[in-house]
Length: 237
Ligand code: FE
Image (cartoon, rainbow, N blue to C red; front, side):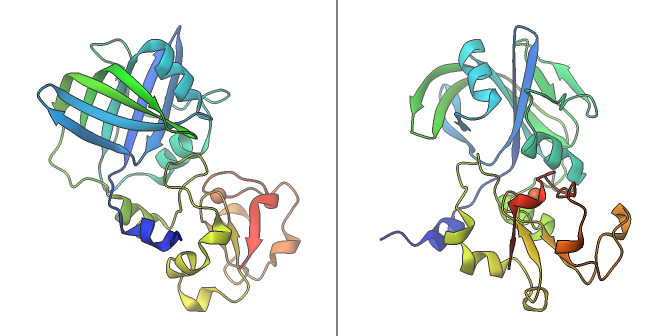
């Protein structure tokens, strides 16, 4: 028996993993990044096979990992976590540089970064685990780092579908409710991709949707303000 709630007891950080191959940059938000050994210094990352980055990292054999600071613009999570480098330039709005290994390193909102040469990889089914030896690293700031707990609690987001920690919402009903206050449960709709909840009482005045607008009355081209998912990805709570 697997109790899915148990997975929420695991702790993580939140990182940006980037690479580049033949001029095509890729980057994604990762919670699975950790140090494996100290001598040599090896980090590991887990990347969904569906991610554009997976192919890029496999071909280039190099990746960078930026450690995100705790307080950052939600747009950075939206752009790097819920969009694809296949059809969107994730880097244009954020400061970054080309690292010593020739791949992009995001310095925006980063307290440190690492540049790694891939030593080997393990096929774990939905994801590839890449082991990378650190060739260069820098500490950029002493600000607090973003933890996965803080990400969930402060930004009210669940894991995107391609995250190693993604759990289908139908298996997460108990845990999902814990992220949302009981008073919000009456007639809200949740985005199954990112966990954003639409509250009809509040509407989205900043997006031109007045308070009191039922979900069904939203325009057909309504999209989730967090991950840009269309209405079909929302479920009534
Ligand atoms: Fe969403």
